[in-house]
Image (cartoon, rainbow, N blue to C red; front, top):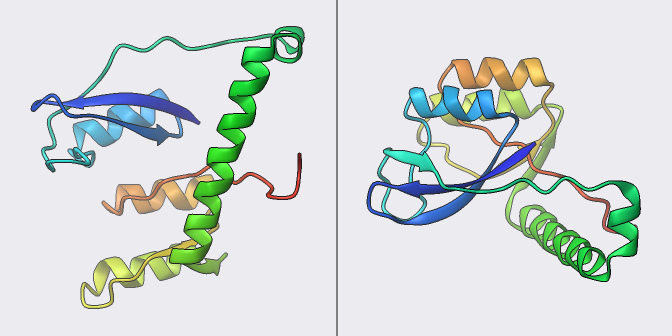
Length: 140
């Protein structure tokens, strides 16, 4: 997974997760990425720098430890939001998302599991799906 800072032609900035940089480029070329604010599909990656740390740096730097805890907390909040507002369809996700996509009247929020191959097939059909880091709520 990779998170990009994105900017639209109207200079709105937002973030999004992608399975890889190739995936971002593929979705962008198919005009499947749109601004979360204005809906334009003219999107560019903003300047960003990756942060690569070894294990000692992660555990010895209090700022990094604090940031990791903050990120973990945000991921848990995201998980709670999804669980509260979306229906878990489990391994039936590919079938259910196709049913929703092809039957426009049946619009509902779902989440579940799909293999990498299943997710690629959905994307090839023009069905936009996203992978989320699913953090365990009980770990500290």
